[in-house]
Length: 526
Image 1: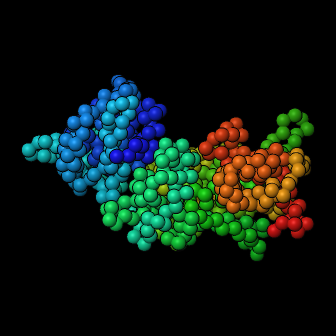
Image 2 (image 1 turned 135 degrees about the vertical axis):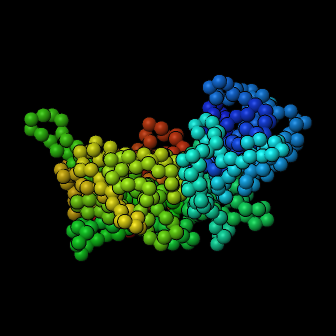
């Protein structure tokens, strides 16, 4: 019997999380409402990744769990499990959640982890014990389980006609293709209690806890989403899982272009591409005015809009199509191309107005992991954020384009008309176009610090930097590399106000980039 609660549920209970769309508390064993709720989680109508039922945990009138919990009698646990097994067989098609027994403040509780089902839609009887049963579709509405009727039932049937691609088993891969270090890094970053014991688990055990592995015990399979996020080379399984960043110094019709290709685990690939674009192509222009003290500061392309547009492409593209995401940058616009286009239920006019809303997410599990990493909200907020970011910067409105067949999708971000854009990437000039020197090296760049700067790619965690340098001892790395580089002003924290944050990452400063350029010009580094 595991001594840790399932993935993230320990965090939910610690935070006294109220009942909601993904968690329901039951003070005792009552098969009818529990089976209906399991059916609703299996249908996963809102594409939230299913949910949890905690049996033996009572709550107050506001849905907040009460501690210590009511608990379950020790001599009732086997009986409840037998009855639960029989009751789950009444769900059509049969659906069985992951069950575990835990002790919370000295009381026994049963935790049912119910991810979105592989064979949606599911029906459950209104009464499990009734002699003549009637089956209905159930879904979650906020904190309640309700019967899906009318339009909701029709939408459920249309949404769940097939298992989403990212939640399918990949029978061309093995569980060993998942990377335990990548999974543990993710768990630490999101602050999950599962990270503490994950290192002692087998790849299969950890994968099942994170819902990345499925199938029978004798023949487990990794899921597509697991290979995308937790394999060092997902393009082996899904060709052209990559982001191509292309710079056209003479415009899209010119003869010159520079290209950089990003591959690797999905989250890292996305972050590295964003950091590269931010460092090389996003330029701030400062315009001073003779009639007032305040200067006007504008960006050619606001980072918030670029981030939302690129993450949107990573989230919603089809990984079955052998086409990369392409970011095309010129002096006039930054365009992001992905395949295929948005669902036909969404009108392009609604995109332009920021009203595009759809539950027909192509990759609900990819969205689940991106949400945990704070890269997306998954609530159709991406387009409104792009519009707001462009407006706040004073930029022309973005353009959203697709064809009649919805074969491709382009988001175009026009450059700000006042922005100055260099002929070369920012790393090869000075950074901001202000006419002023940006940042000075404030300490000695030792050989160790120089090696660190050469190894830096985009935004990196402490562990990623240490692994890039092949250093085993954290204390030595901090003392000889990390701290001198921070004190010298050549790297900086992404979260300076939260130096101990699990999400802390590091990046080159303008001074650090300039030092590297000088060394390259002298031929002292590659």
